[in-house]
Image 1: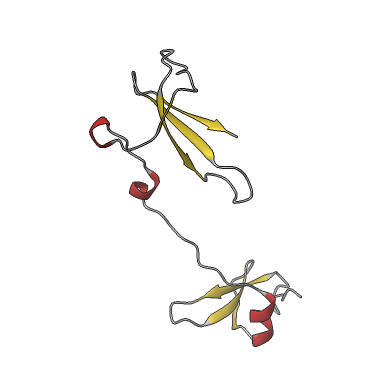
Image 2: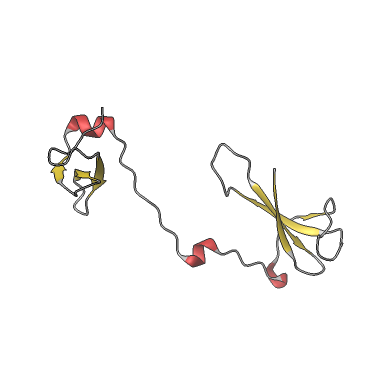
Length: 114
């Protein structure tokens, strides 16, 4: 059962503080109180993972390419029939991964959703 703020009756959410304690914090007015064991059973406290721009960027250069090659695609830019490919899970885990291609001739990169 969700907990509501005693001041403004806004919804309270669990927040893990730096000291490791979990508090219930009102999303409307900011009122804070220590979470009870019942609150901890009701809510799952998670930590948001942040990535730097370097983590988000994939660089593929010709001198260190160790990717598989496919001959089943045609480059939309130059029409060449060979490309490197790799797959990354860009959406939810229950959806198929996104397949990326890089043309071996012109270097154009495109994606294909399955």
